[in-house]
Amino acid sequence: MTDVLEELRARLQHAASELRAGGLQPAETLAMIEECARLAGDAAAQVDSHVRAALEPLPDLPGQLPLAAAQG
Image (cartoon, rainbow, N blue to C red; front, side):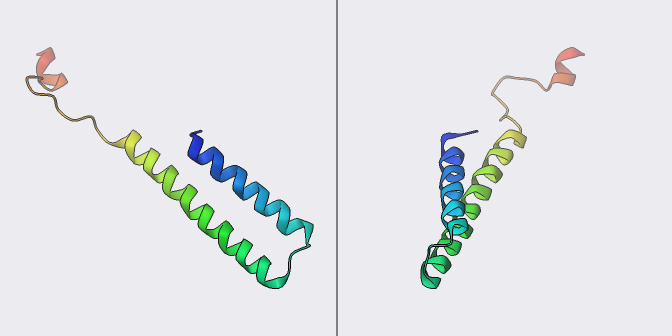
């Protein structure tokens, strides 16, 4: 897991603990829920970015033949 995802996980975990504790005022609870939604969106964007990077083919380098042509 990347440092960014680890940080987002820790922040979400902290926010969830505060929500479960129940000591927040209604406006604070709403703000915390909105923060959780934002953090979850950030985490999803990070995961998406990592997945896209892993699935993207490597660029063709000049002078290299495709694998099938190189074997023939």
